Length: 387
Image 1 (cartoon, one colour):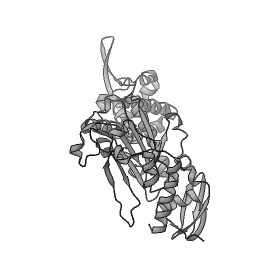
Image 2 (cartoon, rainbow, N blue to C red):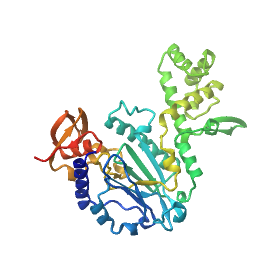
Image 3 (tube, one colour):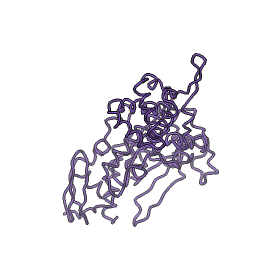
Image 4 (tube, rainbow, N blue to C red):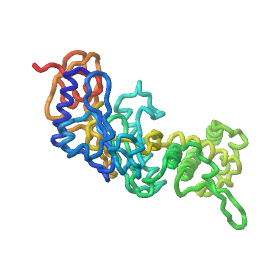
């Protein structure tokens, strides 16, 4: 980034902080604070091991420093400003989840547009929130758009704050369905003196697999027998005999299937459940970044600050607003929507913001400031000289 562009962005970030106050986390004075300034050249410098006391007034700090990126620790410490982790005196930490579009199995970062990446990441976010609320019963959640390629979720229920890294890893393994115990999704019940194996249908992965089984059975009943048999044979471990048994159970005893009774179709239905479990876990997991969650000292972005790689706001999202949240509309700072600026592009690039698609051709062009800030922050444009 050249000097003109860097100084322009630093100045406009400062203007943003003159009218906007970042959102302070609970126990802000017990957390470590860090930031990355607008360092000249290609490298970056992390300034950390600061306490809120070291910063002074947060509003004044952000106005005067206008950092490129700003962070606070998930952890609470006895002495957050101590120069080493061993001296800080760890007390507790939020349970933090990070979803990054670059890490989604369905996304090729080199082929997908920024809008496509964010859309896929929001789908994963909705699944993650579902796990945290429905499967774990967490209530104190803060959802945050990272300002870059994904989302953060902070869990602050008292029961999770003192969990160690291993316990946090177990939660990650659950939402990512790592080493999921299929047998654990099934329980044995007695009915009229007879034991029967039944899918757990009231919650968790058992409920998800059961819903997939019921939907699959309903779909097959709508097909001709030969087509339905062919669909079943596509699954590993299911040949003609098992396919015929399963299809017969679907037609003969649909209520037993809806109840999760795996005895209704013999071992064929149990094999079908195993195959569906693989499909369900492949499509419904939340691919969170494990090191972020298991690191009880992690620094995470401050809501209400600006992301130095996009110029977008690190934006808190109320739970009831999640469905309608659009980061390419709702995370654009109002401060950058009031005028146009001149920028210079070396290559043709596309920017999609506020519902519009901007094609930036090589050379100098005039664009809305939020488009220019986005392109410059991402390294796709430079600030043109003032005329």
